[in-house]
Length: 32
Image (cartoon, rainbow, N blue to C red; front, side):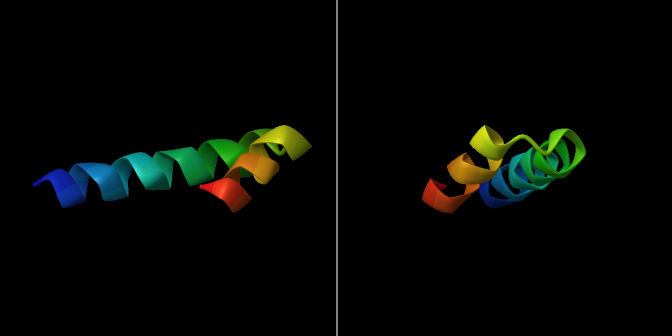
């Protein structure tokens, strides 16, 4: 169950990054 929640949160995070697109968020993806 935790894996599903984690995958969902990760998907939302990726969507936010692609929507916003600032360099700082893209940088955080590299370290994430």
